Length: 135
Image (cartoon, rainbow, N blue to C red):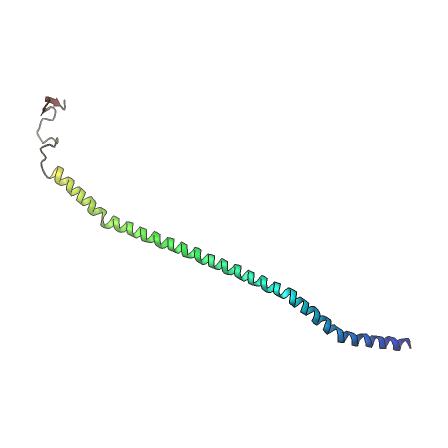
C-alpha cells in the first residue's frame, strides 16, 4: 500500500505542477515584461540616440574639415592668380617708371658721372656758395 500511495501522490504532484507551472511561468514572464522590457527598450533607444549623435557630430566635423580645405584651396588659388597676373604687371610698371625717370632720360639733377668726367673733384653751386665734394 505505501507504494500505491506514493505513486498516487507523485501522480497528483505532476498534475498540479503541469497545471500551475504554466500559470507561474506566465505570471513571472508578465512581471519581467512589465519591468525589464521597458528598461531594455529605453537603454536601446538611448544607445541608438547616442550613436546618432556621434554620427551627426562626425558628419559636422567632416563638413567643417571639407569647408576648411575648400577655403584653403580658394585662398591659394586667389594668391597664385594675384602673383601670376597682378604682381608682374605692378613690378613691370614700377621698373618702367624707374627706367623712364632715371635711366632712359637724362636727369639734370642726376649725380651719375658720365664717362670721361673728372669724378675726383666736382663743384656744386648753391645759394650758400660753392663747395667741393668727392675728394
